[in-house]
Image 1: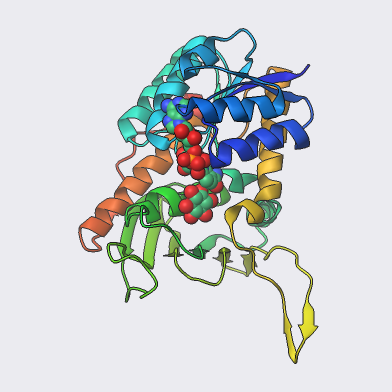
Image 2 (image 1 turned 90 degrees about the vertical axis):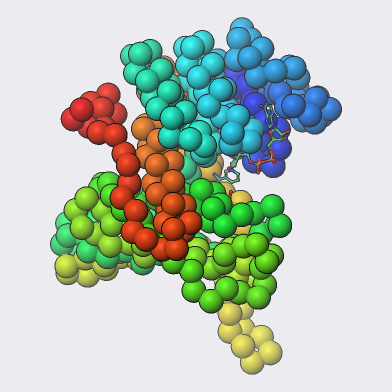
Length: 339
Ligand code: NAD
Ligand code: ISE
């Protein structure tokens, strides 16, 4: 069976995922595209032989669409995901699931009322080979209990439109999701402090930021978010346990020796760093939709958890670095919890 996917939002990542669904993943075809920029929708749709439709509602209701991919701006995600659930269609939503905890809970409630999982959230790091190997090592128990995690998330530069809150909402949100999954633990508090600011930033931005998280089991996480580091896109993660540690590998790259120096290139953006993770993410999602089974990737509950944890981090930043308790509802049995 070919899964016919309708795409809402034909911008940067929407176009990259359309290419992926068309050229990389087998068993999928993009049959419909919509964008509030109708000319862009028409152009992108024509590239892959899809139909351009005027609105997300029409796309979700189309008989030519089996499953929905939401890659529009964050504040519009909740409306499209709720419409897809109402239509009973599987929906893959790029992060964030929604920009408010209330909207995330509306999605969680709608999905529970539907009775089976339809939603997957685009936290692609869970599909990265390095993080998957780290998870296996931690779960094997060979390091003993995990105690501390040291992380860094660095981007070369960000535009003027990037705000201080986005360091948590847009950037650290990936560590927040992957660490909950990696440790099989919940984050219960957040603290954000700001060291000396880099001169290479726009004036309004607090950059870098150091974030501290504590989990229910008492694991302490430190995360440096530095989005104007200049030198490249660099993701680091090291988990220290009672009997050893496990470190995320850097992407494989050839070593070059020339002019008296030996070095390897540093990637420049997340698209290259996580290209294979995105491919695997969509292979597994399309496979589940084709088989008629529930998605196994990050759930609507994970999307809710990420939003309430980033809310706590933003509140800490705004309160000058106070420790803020995460205000999370008990996890329902539907999502593997006990409530
Ligand atoms: P973008 O601005 O390049 O593209 C968004 C597109 O959506 C635009 O073409 C815009 O016109 C369209 N749009 C907005 N609202 C719409 C609506 N209601 N209906 C139809 N079209 C609509 O943005 P982007 O960088 O592609 O990001 C899109 C989403 O993907 C964001 O939520 C972002 O956080 C997420 N993202 C995730 C990753 C990742 O690493 N997983 C990376 C980048 C972006
Ligand atoms: C961007 O939106 C992403 O999602 C990238 O994965 C992340 O590394 C970057 O910092 C964000 O701005």
